[in-house]
Length: 118
Picture 1 (spheres, one colour):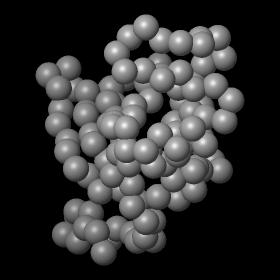
Picture 2: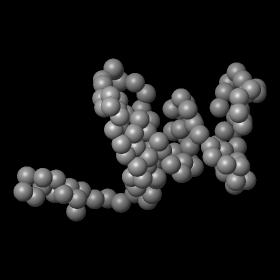
Picture 3: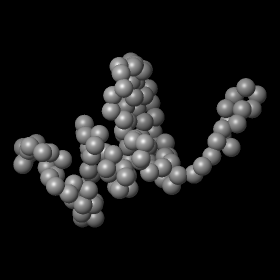
């Protein structure tokens, strides 16, 4: 999504303007391949709220550099996730692939000093 670009000169790229959510829904219905969002927290938040994200690929770094932008806002709809892949880089960053699923309320209990899902 761009407020300034009208076209992109790299790869199979589509610049979205105006109703990005409707355009993404149409692209997904048309089966035009994989869609990716890079560097647009606002678009990712809107796609999350619309239920249009099939998979998250998150890279979490073990540092604190301030508040930053939140991927999930306070008004985001609840979702559960299936962990499809997880690995840690040599630098300690954690790469995770998560697939959204229906939210299920649950909790943790402590057994023998360890957390256990119930």
